[in-house]
Length: 120
Length: 112
Image (cartoon, rainbow over all chains, first blue to last red; front, side, top):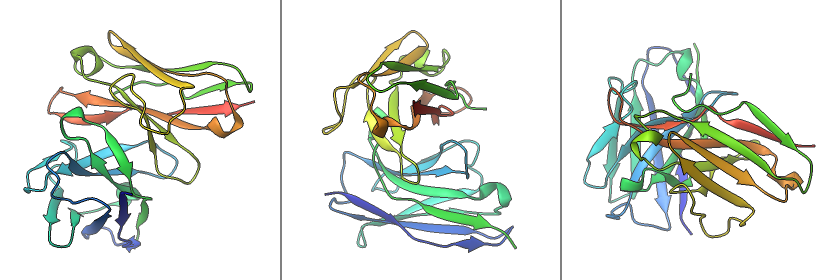
C-alpha cells in the first residue's frame, strides 16, 4: 500500500527557509506515470497547490509561489523535497505531500500532513 | 478568494440527497478541464472521492457521484450518513495567467 510521510520541521522563524521532505513507501518515485506534489492548508482555511515534480527533476510551480519555491528529488532514497524561502506568518499551514496523477491533474494519495508554524 | 466557487455550507438529514456545486470559468472547467472532488474529515488529510468528473476510486461508495456541465460541476451524495459529515473540495486545472492546479474554497457538509 502506498504511503507518504512528511518530515516535521515544526517551528520556522520569519525570513528563514522552510524545508520539507516526503518519503514514499509502497511505490517507486521513479514511476513514469505520476508526478509528486505539495499542497498546503492554512489553519481553518482551504487547500492551495504549491508545486509538483517528476522523477526526472522536471518541476512546475504555482505561479503565486514560484519565486520562493524549489522542489528536488532523491530517487536513491525514494523521497522528494521542497524549500520555501523568506517565510512569513502567512506561510503557517499544514503541508501535505501527495501523488500527482500527471496529465489528469488530480492527487490520488496523500500524506497525513505536517503543521509548520512560522513564528519568532 | 478561490478560483473555483463553492457554497460555504450545505446540510441534510440522514437518508437524504444533497448536492454541492463548484463554479468555475472559461479558463478552467469551461476549458474542458476535468473536475475532481476530495473529502476531508476533521483532522485528516483530504481523500480523493471523484476524479475525471464522474469516476470513483476503488472503495468509494456509489452514493457519491459527480457531474460537469459548462463552467460548473456538482457532487451529489445520496442516502446521507452521519459519517459523511466533512468538508468537500473541488479541484481543477486553470490556464489563466499561468498554468496551475486550483481548488474550491470547500463546503462544510452537516448531517442534521
